[in-house]
Image (cartoon, rainbow, N blue to C red; front, side, top):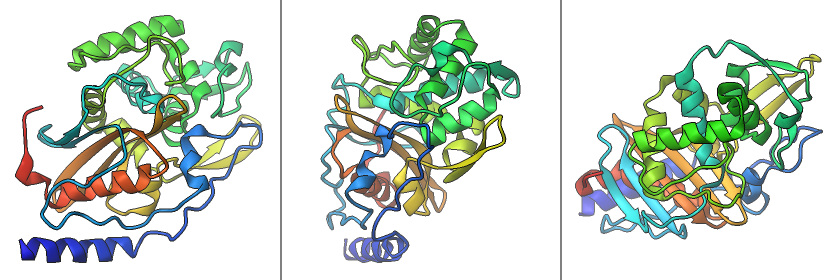
Length: 305
């Protein structure tokens, strides 16, 4: 026990030293509205969390939590895992999984007027502009663009309602028994909900997809518009940007959902995923603590998924 405490303290000191004292503000696209996914960055930066010396999971403010081993799928810790609630933009992982598995990512699509009708986080494209599916998928996961989600969904299924049907079929395929999806971007709408347990299954599938894995780890994305203008988008995941062991995944925020984050980390051959829904502005610190606990001690508390 003393050795564990000592090792945990050393780990915290070494990793915490690499974190910024204050989070850098995100660069905004001039034509885009304020990103709800980045709300926590306005008030605080990352600070190294303290783990319980007895090896128990850290106390976090999130309403619903699941921490799992990313390799085995075994659950390490839960808190209200089956509580139905909105998942906000974390459900874009399901959208991305469907798009990635459909393939032909270098196929071009033409933006339609209906694709632009989304707030508040937007790429700001215009009807008639042409992008590849890969370009829109990448900026979807890095910058959490709601209009990009609409374009990808409409291109994939013909309409948003048809894509939502695909999302629900995929959810059933993944074993998600307490979810229902209505749109591809997670913006509030009646009848849309999930649970931390269900979202952990999406996260596990997304983590196993090499296309998604190669995108969610991107910290900064230079994006070129058709007119030649280049905007550098910072990843909305502050844990990814501030902690070297984090390797993805997806942020989310609405007033109804609260602050949400699905995040992952890897160290010494061990890989863990944390799902935290309904948190406050401590989401980054809470998720960091859950990941660090999972990497350092969670192997003693494996359970069935």
